[in-house]
Image (tube, rainbow, N blue to C red; front, side, top):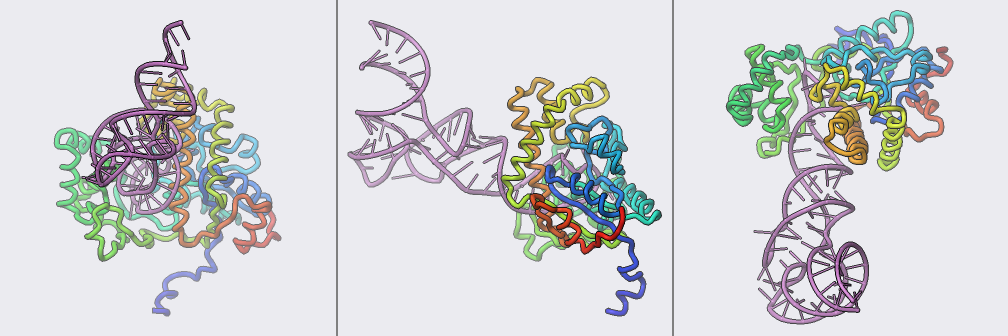
Length: 347
RNA sequence: GGCGCGGUGGCAGAGUGGUCAUGCAGCGGACUGCAACUCCGUUAACGCCGGUUCGAUUCCGACCCGCGCCU
C-alpha cells in the first residue's frame, strides 16, 4: 500500500505552488491579496460568483480600477449579468488561468469567498451533464401539474440515495437530480465518483441533515501544492460591524443607481443568478416598491450577514485551512509565516 | 384629574385557565453545474405587585408606562 501510493504519481514536492485566500465577505481578503502581491511573485485569480459579472461593481465590492491596475484580477468581468455560470465552469477557467501563471514562473493566488468554487477546484467534480434549460422547464411544468411532492416521489423511486440527501422542499437541488436522471438515464448518485458517506444510523434521521464525510476527490485533484489560508475576525460582532459599515459605504458610492441602471437595461429579471446576489436582490425589491429605504438597508445588511455565516460554515470544517486573524496588525507577516514562504522571493 | 384602549421573546404580530402561534432577525447545520443560490434545524416572551384557582400570560384589583378623548 505504501509503495503503490507513490508509484503512479509525481511526488508532491514537484507540484507547482498555489495560494488560496478564503474568508467571509468583508473580512479584508482583497487587501491582504494586494499586499501579498507586493511581497511575492503572485498573480490573482478571483474566486467569486458575483464579481464575474460586468456592470456589477459597487455591490460586489469589486476592487477599484486603481487596485486592478496595480494587481490585475483574473475571472472578474467575464460574464454578462444575463449569463449563468457554474462551479464547473469556474474550475475549468481557473485551471487555465493557473496554468498560464505557472508557465511564466509565477504563483497563482486565488482569492475569494465562493466556497463552492474552492471546493470544486480542489477536489474536482464528477462527470455530469451541465444544466439543460429545456429539461428544467419540463420539470417545472411537471411540478405545476403534479405538485412538488410527486417530483420528490419520483426521485425516491429512481434514486433513493439522492432522495434521502435532498429535502423535498429543496426544489433547486431536486430539479438538478431529476435533470441528470433524464439526461443520462442514470441516478445522479450513481454518477458521483465519490458519493457522500452517510453514517450508519442515517435511516433513523428524518430531517435530511445527514452527516457526511468530506468529499474525496471527485475527479482529478488539483495538481498544485496549495497553501490554504483562511481569514476572518475572531469575533462575530466585529464582522457584523464591518458588514454594516461596508453596506453603508456601498450606498454612498451609488449602489442604488447601479441597480437602477441594471433594471433599465430591460433584459434582466430578479430570478437571474446575477440579480439574486446579496444587495442586488434587496435593491431590486426596494426599487420595485416592495419596501421602503430603511427596510431595504436592514434586509441588505442582514442578507450579507447570512452570507458570511454560510461562508464560515464551510470554513469551519475546511480540512487544511491555515487560519489568520483578519484584525492582526501585520496580517501579511502572519500569512507569510503560516504559509512557510520566504520573503526573499521577489514580486 | 377623569374616562377609554393598550403594554407578549431583538423587532413585528396572533392567542389561550394547564402541552403558549407565526414572520423577520440571531444562532447551528447541509450543500457535485444557479452557490452572494437553495434548503434544514433551533434559542428566546407574556410591564410590575397582590388576589382567585390544584394551576395563571390568560380572570380580578392596585400600581407604572404609552396612546386617545374629556374637564
